[in-house]
Length: 164
Image (cartoon, rainbow, N blue to C red):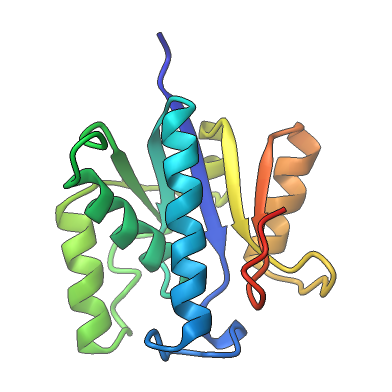
C-alpha cells in the first residue's frame, strides 16, 4: 500500500497579527488547528508530511509533527523538510537556527530547487492562507498550483483559525 502524504505551507510570522509572539492566543489557536488537521489526516492514512524550512508555519508544523511522533499511536509520522538550498537558514537568529537544526536532526532533509516539488509529492495540502487577500507569495503560488492539479486542500485562516 502506497504511503499517503501531505504538504504543509503557510506564511512567515510577519504576516500574522501576532508576528513572532508565539505565546499569543492567535498563534496558539493556529498551532492547535494544525495539530487537529494532522491527527485527522493521520487517521485517514497519511503518514508522510512535507514542510518547508522557513520560520512560521513551516517551523511550527515540523515541531508539532515531531511531538506527535513521540505520542503513542503516531509513531509512523514521517517528517520531510524541503529546503531550497543548503544553509538556507544562515541569516536566522541563534534561537531560530537551533530550532531549525533540531527539526533537521530529526527529519529527512531534502534539497530541491523548485518549490512545486513539495506539492508534486503530496496527496493533500494544508495551507495556512487567507484566500481573500490575494497576497502574492510562495504560499499563494503553491495553493494555485495545487488547485490546478485538483489536489484536496485544507485551508486554515491565518487570523481566525477557521478551517475550510
